[in-house]
Image (cartoon, rainbow, N blue to C red; front, top):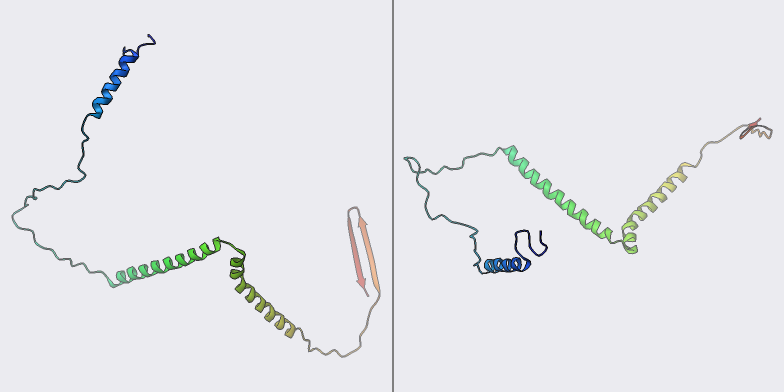
Length: 161
């Protein structure tokens, strides 16, 4: 194939002229607008011998179904409120500053301090002994010390007599 001709047998200048002619032909056409909706002006034909009759809605909803519907709406609204509150709290905690952390932990620290004080007072009140010992007291000062060592392990046994 000759390098000066295209695959359709046109030279480069002929192909360029043909391409320009096609582009100009396309650009000179008017733009067609397509409708996005259509309303049919013809009325629908009547069906059958009798005219249509109004049919009233006589559905009855059971009380339990209405109750479940109202309860589910209430639960949904409550959960939504809880979720919004949690979102607000977590948005506030997301911007962590020293003062924010201190303000959040301050009530917990106060409760912990009060609980520690109450626990200490109760422990001290229980530790008072009311037992009175009467009788002789014997103090043993003899200690038997035996020690066994084997390799890496050792064992010490203290016996008080």
